[in-house]
Length: 169
Image (cartoon, rainbow, N blue to C red):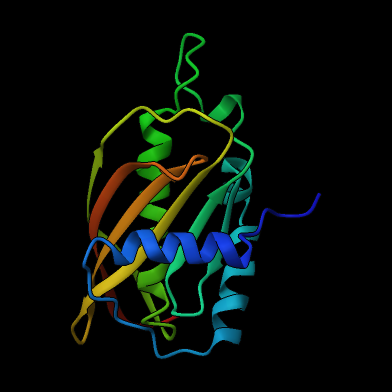
């Protein structure tokens, strides 16, 4: 089975939606090839495969987590069609963590603060999360994420901080 990928029009749509928010985007210093290798590695992790997460980076270095298709494991309990809040929080963390890791490719790092706001129930067949860095210090990046449904409606937002340790990966 091939992994879902965003086409150029979808990437442009996400970029347009995030740009409309007025956030300043800080581009990582690593190459597009390094980002693509990191995305392939992340997507191969057993936990990411179980959740159906696929990571892709945009040309500007923003992270995109894709769940396509949404399945029963993504839905709420008791036969609900809406996506479970834990999945939404997880995709927000994934988008924030991966764009943050891209800024510290040589160091062990992780999400140290995460806040998610769910704006509407998520229905449909796919979920897209877009992560950007809005500020960087020597050992931390401050990130934002936006989550869109298959109709490109904004469904959730998030903020987070990714911190790098002094230890190499």
